[in-house]
Image (cartoon, rainbow, N blue to C red; front, side):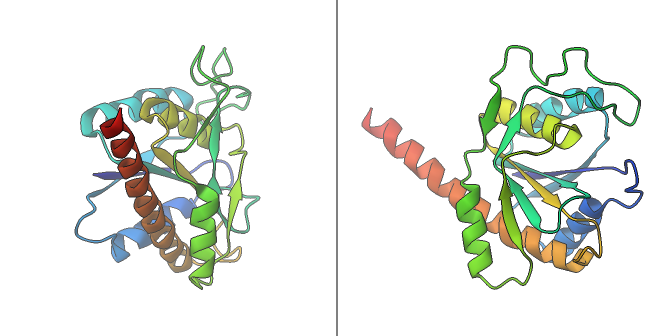
Length: 204
C-alpha cells in the first residue's frame, strides 16, 4: 500500500505542477506490486490536520509521498525533514494556527527514515536527464506543515518531493519520469530499512 498526496492550486500556481507530475506518474505506474492511491490536499492547515491522520488510520500505508510545487525550485527536490514551528503564512482560507506549529509538544524537527542523499545519488547516476537535489528546509508553509504531520504520525515513514513549475525547465512528462525513478529508489531503501529493523528485533 502506497499513497501519493499532492497539493491543490494556490497563489500564482493555478495549474499545480505537482498535480500534472502525479498524473504522469499514474500513467507510467510503479509496478503491479505497488497499490498506488492519489489524494489532493487542500492548501489549508485545518484540512491537513484532519485529512492526513484519517488516511494513515484508514489505510496504514507502507509509505506516503507528498508532492508539492515550489516557485523557487529548478530541480526535483527531496526534502530530508519536516519542521514543527514557524508557520506564520496564511493558507487559502486566510487561516494560520495560533500556535504557529504542527504538533504542540512535538519535536522541533523529524527526519524521514529514507536516506534522501542516497536516493538523490542513485537517481542522478541513472542518467535520468532531470536534475535532483536534497533540501533540509521544506519552506514553513503547507508543504512543510503536511510533511511534519505525516512524519510525526508515521514515525518517519514519509517523504516529500518538491517539483519546479511546469516548463521551468521540465515538462509534466519529465517530472512524472523523475517521480517514478525517485519513488522506486525510496521503496527499495525502505525495504532495506525494514529488513534491518526486523533483524534487530530478532536479536533482542
